[in-house]
Length: 202
Image (cartoon, rainbow, N blue to C red):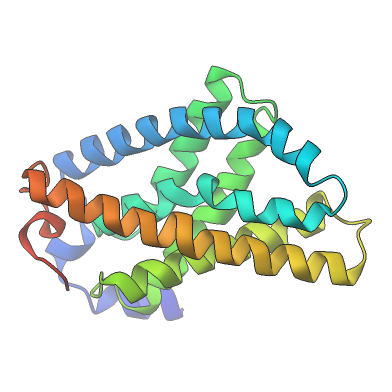
C-alpha cells in the first residue's frame, strides 16, 4: 500500500516509461551484464584469497550491484533498478556465469534493494547521498539473501561481518562509482534525453 500511495503522487510523465527509456535501460543492462560475467570470473581468485577469512569476500560484491543503481540514476522511473539488475544478471547467465540461472533471483533481490531507496525518495532525488544509499540498500539485500542461501553454516559473527563488508562495497562500488559514471555520461551529452543529462544534481 505504501508503494502504491507513493507512486500515485508522481505525475504520469514521471511514472511512465518511454521507448527511449526501455532502449537505454536495456543497453545499460547488457553492457553491465558483460561486466558481471567478467566480475564473476574474478571471484574464483577472490575466494582463494579470502579462504582464511571468508567474510572479506563481501568487499568484492559491489561489482554485482552496479546495474540497478546506475540504471535507476539514469532512467529515473519506477522499476528501473530492478529491470536493469535482472536483465544484467540474465545476460551474464546467457554468457555462462558459473552460477547459472540462479543469478536471476539474486538480481531481483539486489535490484529491489536499490529500488526501495529510490522509492523512499519518491523518485525525486538523485543526488550523491541517494546514490550511496541505493548502493547500501543493494548491498544489504545481497548480504541478507546470501547469508540465508549460501552462508547458512557460518557463525553469526561471520554473517554480520559479511553484511558490513558487502554494504560498504555497495556504497563505494555501486553507489559512488555509478554516480560518477552517470555524471561522466551526462557531460558527454549522450543522456540529453534524460533528466540525468540535463541537471547537474537534483
